[in-house]
Image 1 (cartoon, rainbow over the protein chains, first blue to last red):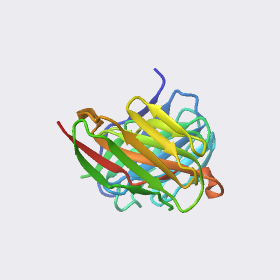
Image 2 (image 1 turned 90 degrees about the vertical axis):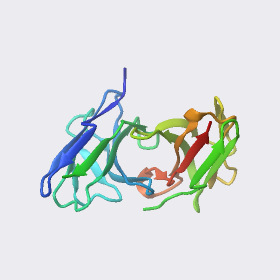
Image 3 (image 1 turned 60 degrees about the horizontal axis):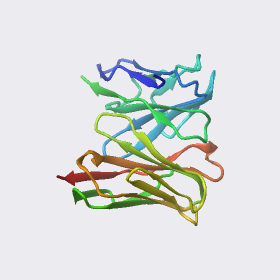
Image 4 (image 1 turned 135 degrees about the vertical axis):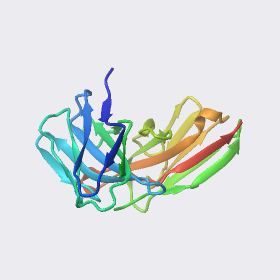
Length: 112
Length: 113
């Protein structure tokens, strides 16, 4: 089945460590997105990519980094510079930037 | 960043009741989307609206793209327990913004069987 796969479902990070969240899609979508979700704050855009080898900062990019080397993959690295990384992270994709986005099931990141 | 005004923030209703929620913006939107999120999962697209005045149904769900292009409504008829979740609206502004979706903060729905 076509879809978006995020892994792992749960992730724990020690203070000072970088961690990478995986997002893979087999929908042949050009655009991919990373959101952060905290209780009561809805979805906030971290980074997005409209095409391979190109990506743009969203509203809360500080402390995060991404790469888009392949169309189907858009990994997100939460760096040690992100001081409050505990959140639910959602990856999404769409055929183009102005089309509806389809989401993965998320990764919940916690600090040990 | 910019956000939509989504209301109500939460609702607690009896099974069988109808539900209505809405989103408003100060600027014109080209597209309105409605999503539902179950606990611990990603949002799922319910309805997409592309034209002012458009009224679209998906089973017991009906959504409308406001005539002013600054608002949208979602109605759920004859609610059932599996309607529980958080409903988000999202919109694509008419201009600028690098064509990024703008999100509401969600309406949390609880249904009492």
